[in-house]
Length: 238
Image (cartoon, rainbow, N blue to C red):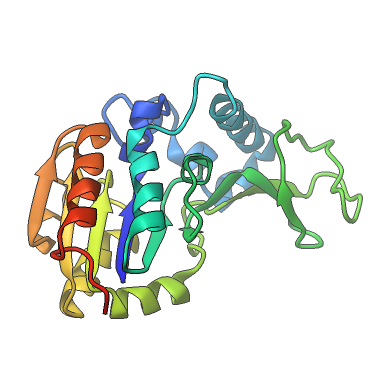
């Protein structure tokens, strides 16, 4: 199995800001004010307004999957080996490109969750404290269906199983700052997988990788997918 982890770097060329770059979102907004469960408890209006801004940006007509997203969808369709894509991104660009076997470990910006009844559903409108839950009708209990700091990522058991049995692990567009994802390459390598980094520049976890290729995601990811589909180094029929 080929296990692929993607981060904000793969969506940057689609026009979405990254969070941790010098000019990224956390350089303009304090994470502690809008990205934690504590922030939501203290000032839910501010946290919801921030999520509304990100949602509107994602839904803008100019935002579309780029060549890297499309290349990974092609790999899933054409590979002789199973491909699982795990993303730290809360956007929907992988789905729009055609990826199917996909886990959003940090949730999805275009979904909401009710903290009262547990409802989760697709949502493209702004959310405020006056917005009623479509299921239980309670107001002031809706939140974005994303994983804030201080919360446990989704799908960890499934990801752990995939890390234990993957033959190839590829990290794309990740900073190596955010745990537990920052440790996935080391886990996969310890389990015998070949681990590859595709990134704009070396990440904090570069030493965990057998190989690294650096440049624009829209160039290096399609090039690697072409190679993966053409050679037995990356895929096999067994």
